[in-house]
Length: 244
Ligand code: OAD
Image 1 (cartoon, helix red, strand yellow):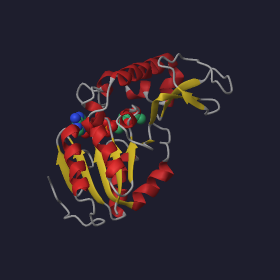
Image 2 (cartoon, rainbow, N blue to C red):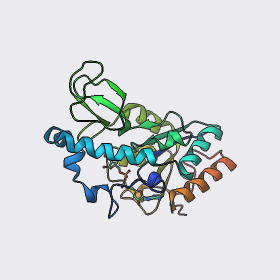
Image 3 (tube, helix red, strand yellow):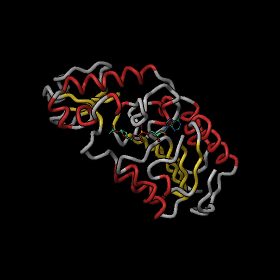
Image 4 (spheres, protein in one colour):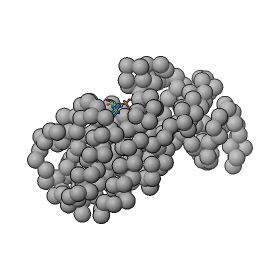
């Protein structure tokens, strides 16, 4: 039974009301990446960065999982093979939708980390700059988010999954940020069938064998229902250039 490896991005949470990063009015149109999503920005102005993630945490707490999150959870529960969900998202809508063992490669809003000793603990809804680490007591709490210039989490485990994938799907991600944007090439090299589910072709869209274009709530639900109706697909055995 083909192992399915799924990468998700901000587009899967858009219909839950969370802003994406690169839309015209998205987060990176409102904030400078270097100010709020780099270790240097945090060193310069910790209050600005902590406030930015407090706002994200508040918005995420008000959001509920949509049909796409729920469809992926259903796939995990009903597909006879392994389904691995890797997300770049820092919200917990996959888990709220019922998904298990989600790999949060860019960190999580509901987690805080000590910049001094790397201890992690559940983040307060409103963090303050200089909050103390509960383990080493250093006033060094920071959001547990992987910033630009930092190493994404679980990268070795992710590449092991990509090596074993029979199907690799990317959902709602613009293909602008590496290493995630390189997963399609890796999966394809290893023989996986690759499918992109997105509102539009991403920056790495040309590398996918199959495209399903439309809002995640629709295209992901349809894709999952098809997989569950006929789950056995040959590893890499789809027509290449298939375009839906
Ligand atoms: P982006 O904002 O770059 O891309 C979102 C993608 O989702 C775009 O390709 C949209 O067309 C698509 N999209 C929007 N609404 C959709 C919908 N309803 N259904 C399907 N697709 C939809 O977000 P990411 O690719 O996730 O990193 O961004 C990757 C990383 O860049 C983020 O994790 C974040 C950011 O900087 C850090 O902060 C470290």
